[in-house]
Image (cartoon, rainbow over all chains, first blue to last red; front, side, top):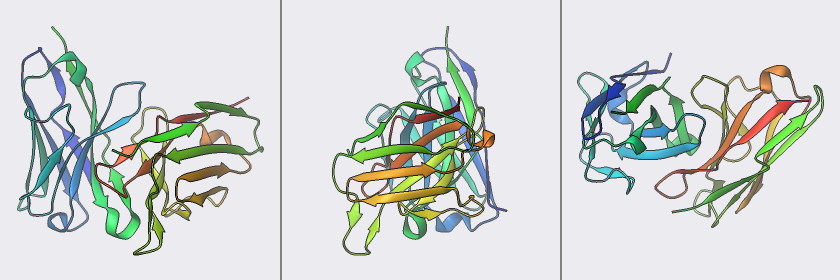
Length: 120
Length: 113
């Protein structure tokens, strides 16, 4: 079964840092681009970052550029999101998702999400 | 970025009736090279993560009941839920991935009257 499991969320003070992880299983992780998408509770979905299959290329939403870093460890089937200089506006549930654009033009599956709360 | 706009924001239907949600993209998301519309419908039930429901605008995902159908091309798309069941209560999002970054509609909530 294809599965993505996020971890690392929690409460952090403004200006703080946090690293999220996404453990992948059930598929050849190193063959797929991966994404992070966030959702403010009760609000819509917003794409955050994308990394290519070998980790050599990444793109970011303007709102996180320069503060967040997406990376991956293909040997351990894990995706990461390093978040720095966090503010209240970064409070959200963060989802990782597999890129299946070539076969389905979409993201599938999505992980269960991990909640990040930035508050003093 | 391509802007995705859904309507309505919320729709209430009786059990067994039909629900229709529309999605409009700010530019065409049809690829002439492969003849596909890069439009996905996602379903998000309360407390759960999004799930891909329909891709390529009209292809149902694995295990998705056939009461769900998608249509449209270019810039205008529709999700139809026939014979709405209680378990269909959710927020539905359209997503384009024709161009990076992938973008989402604001969501449409389906409720039971």
